[in-house]
Length: 403
Image (cartoon, rainbow, N blue to C red; front, side, top):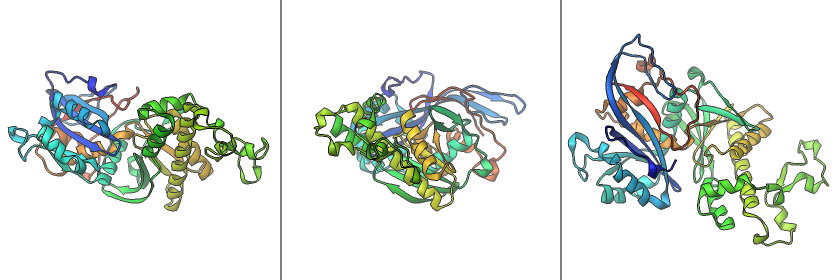
């Protein structure tokens, strides 16, 4: 779905926009309210696409929305916010835009880089939250609150993983944005960035644009669907005359050198198809990330690795390549786990931070606190969709209980 085509219903009320402004993409999360009614303790409520809490409280009906824009096209993002009046939810007590009380939670490097632009264009201040804090908070929220959020992906098969909240920690969170951060998460607010790599989504997009002349990340991914990396990659079989190197466990189809055939082929760049180049590039970066991730998991004795960030985008070949890499290097002892809302971890964490700072907004407080982040909330239950797919720009229907 094109974010520019999203329409906010006339009878809805926007509450609290949150932003994650990265080097490549801007991610938005916001809640739109429909109506209010009451629900009893004993009344069973469930829905295919609802987040529901079992308590006696008034209920706010609405949707949690997700949208993204390329950071290079930030003016499109500003216009989207202005047109749908998303920024007005950050103006407390009826304040007009431009006052110091008009704040929107934001994270990522762009929250600093573009702070003046948001103030000039929309009259709002960006209340900055730490990027790593938000990534971890967003991941913890999804893993605890949303049914069937995490899944494995192997040979084209998606299998959802049931998360035991009592056995969630520790885990390794691998966030693949422009670069890659690897974070060891030990609990709510307890984490350490243990590693990373500068070879990430920005590398794929940057090199891909130079080599294929693609105009967007999604166009580059689409090309990779139709490509054959074996045209450019040097395989073990190419070196051993079609045979495998069984002594060290390498099959004949294993990649010995990404782009290695370009060394010996008497060809120019224009002789290779953009489809094959993008496929080889995607495979090289995904393999590299999968290997480094597992080595860090091994370093800390972690068997569970969650991958997030907009590099993945639910792309089958990307997930399959990462999964194969983790499986190969761990000898089957570890699995790569993916998240449905992979690209919005930071934005969700920024959204959750409204409550952390004690703002008197019951919508945000109840929406983000009904999963067991502390002893006082362990009695609440949230149910996400039992089936169906959520893509990166799809909203979630919510029922929020208000104290």
